[in-house]
Length: 193
Image 1 (cartoon, one colour):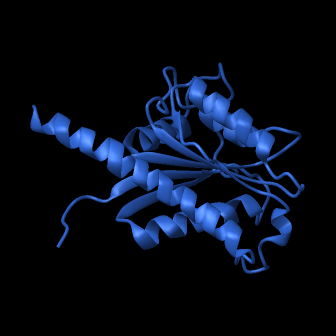
Image 2: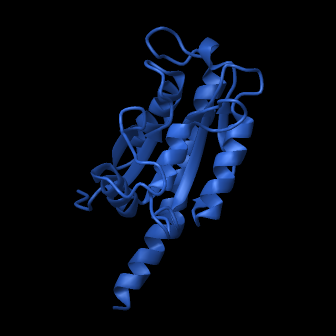
């Protein structure tokens, strides 16, 4: 019997549209985490959280987000692509993580969803660049889901097994990174104290 505390993963969905596809894509990754790993996943829906703009000072939501990120072993960020970049909700979330950012040193896995034929490639490039800039370790191989409106049915089920495999694989890669790189390092640090 394993009595260890479950690892904490933070997942954030960056779409502000009701019943959005970004959340459906992220749900596959979260489901994979729950089905194969001992984890606790906190899900932040960025459309329902009112983060202040830079220069306005922190809010309760700011402090809560910073604490969640600090306590997370890994982060999953999911964004739609709007006008060739990631969502403004995701940008405000990142801007509220402080300076230095609480994302610094955290492994971050990126998911994107878009209706277009190339998916959220540009959004993921921009998001990855910003996350790297604030010190996060962005995992290679972000997953972009193109023509997302044709990939899911009305109940949110994925209709494309290959895309589902890629999304679930991203969650597995995040856990593999945490378990092979972060957990052994933390155990070593505790053993020398």
